[in-house]
Length: 128
Image (cartoon, rainbow, N blue to C red; front, side):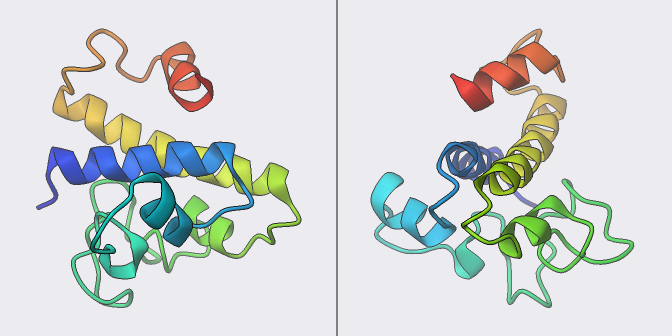
């Protein structure tokens, strides 16, 4: 079971990546989060190798795979979108961040009381 801290780290990373489409998860971990130890699979939710990982299960329906392996998932699409296509990288990163925000809201995150799934609140979190 993933904890709130892992979810918040995941949300923070994808929120940041939505604003900086030329960068990747490794850059975020090293230069923004300043992590001494990198996350497995560059993901705070990872609990194993990419093919065996199910840490994102609360965020994504696993009918066709995980966020990393399902061709319909926004994370998969982000990974397969060229950096020369910043609009789509921003779009897909934002969608990943919103998935995390929704799960955090369902958990009753203290930092967002009354904002559960509110589009204006989500927009403010993504775009300051």
